[in-house]
Length: 519
Image 1 (cartoon, rainbow, N blue to C red):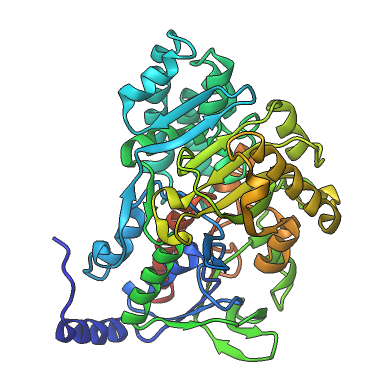
Image 2 (image 1 turned 45 degrees about the vertical axis):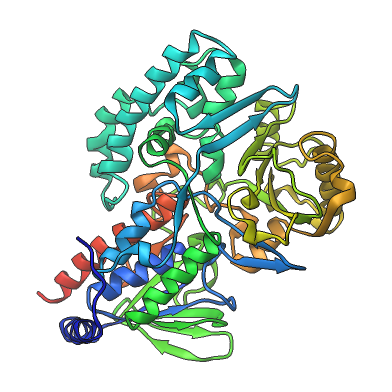
């Protein structure tokens, strides 16, 4: 049973930790969820930890925006593997329930199609069968078989591999028979279509790669494991929003003696050319922090291109820079309304007329089109604190091409905003144009400037098979052995489960590194 330490117990705990860790200085650059998880795991292993971030508040993309009485989660809004956050508190003998409140949502997503047909996706499996029957009776059995396939992929892709380092090509070779058996050579859409025949339902059950920056028509079918992951743990919301989870983790870090420094914009990470080791982190004002280990939580592409005093090349196991494919960009519209839309679910997927063609334009043609599909987040469906009385708060995410498209967002942003508001006003948010207030937006240009994401990509490099596991950025640099990485760009990938799991992978590699330096 988890327990919260008393003051005396905690003081003894801190003393033992600092002595057993031999005061090794770990510097974590970037305070997103990956960096926070890595900092806590390093502290639990006895190291002195400093967590840095260039922004004024921690959380990375999980910032909080406040406008005229309305609150918005800037980034992640869906919690699908709550145990990964609970583990971070358990590391210190504490209970996550003492720090935040997680609520399991009854309705996971409501899908609205271009002809106004709807599909309500919930945690009640019998309800899901009933929803499927509205489209095609035969697809009930197909969905049941899809879930069985998803469970098998989950047992390999998540249970066995999500927290396992990939440092050798031979590890990938050993996996080939399993991957072939699981049909990982298929795309998500292809695998779903082998079980589901109805075109509406194919769109519903192949949408998950978009949550991690991938195109369902090109993303490896390994990502169908998300179906089973959702069924196993459900979909949750943190009361107060994702920012409340960040605040809880910040409280834990302060309690455990982690130093947190915001407004620290890292300009370079110094590498000793003789020892081939990272020695210090330097900000834009010339301030220096010594380090025995550095953990970088950010876009690895940006780090390799811009931050190292000694020119580093990305791992040879990866594609050349010219062939590396990045995730799509995100246009995110935030606004409040002066009325409530009670009939709108917490999470809604609004699908436009085109599907495959639209995704091809976004991912392959790098072309911003007139049409779009949307993810609409209405947190006030669960937590009224996000808006003033009798009002709603909204976050609308529109997948768009990343900056490789050459789009001028100072011109196209206002146009897209107007098209989205008009479309929603004509459909699920009647008279929105008369009720919208305090609206603003972010484009891929903001992801580049605010989060240092190469090409303004929303999720770092795309989750293709050729950019996964051993072929993704390494959690430990192959040559600079005290340089580690966590976050969306490294194994196991984007999305909160992947990002938080990357800290577990890196923890294993740090332990190996420390053991090797002691012999």
